[in-house]
Length: 117
Image 1 (cartoon, rainbow, N blue to C red):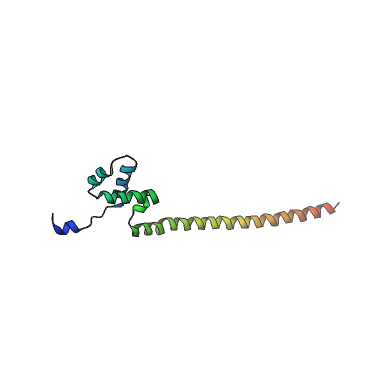
Image 2: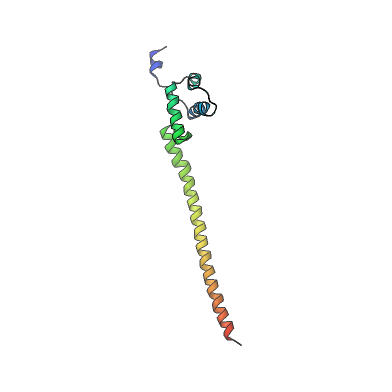
């Protein structure tokens, strides 16, 4: 084997990591079998399994990918939801104020009608 390739670190994709972990955890396969199938070290698979158990599948994403997907995906979605909630809240506050004014108007109207013959 070429010395340059031997020292080169092979990167596994997120999908490969999830596949490997789920083969062990959900299908009950042995770590060594899955590691040799994917040509990875069994210790790497053990680390992936621990991360998966602790923080779920998103922990297997590269650090930059986890941060970017969190900021772009869930924070943007959360901001959108918050804006929708604020709009609904503002609408309900306005509706409540209108109803209070209408209720006060009805009370005044009843007082006016009660004093007339």
